[in-house]
Image (cartoon, rainbow, N blue to C red):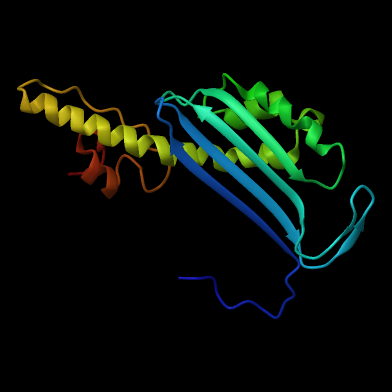
Length: 193
């Protein structure tokens, strides 16, 4: 169901964020983020001259390579369009994110390493959707493989340990007393029977 019909208005700005997750042949994962900001009107820019309607004011890319443990092993950032000529010089600083684990406290750790004058507002913002994309990419595949391994062990007569499900209590849908957990992970269900 879309949003309600808006009042009369004029389109001014479009921000597009696209993130993709890939499993590499070497067992690592690449998560790529891309952000653009586009105006519907042209304007004069000190460093770039006239920026016509539809040409990006910002266009940045970031690729984060992680392992199954969600620890960042490699980062590459690129700025194709920015309002200032010096903006692209900060991209290599994003290599300072190597070693961080995607998870709780990530935003603060990112700000500590590439926040303020040590980074780019837009590349730093892009790390939020990149981290979410990493979870959406990695966890379903690992969970499917873990479930298959569990089934194989049980087929061989082995008792399987209780599966760890990191998504429980991370949102309303995954609450431990909710219907999704009751159905998907009954061993972890805490609601009324």
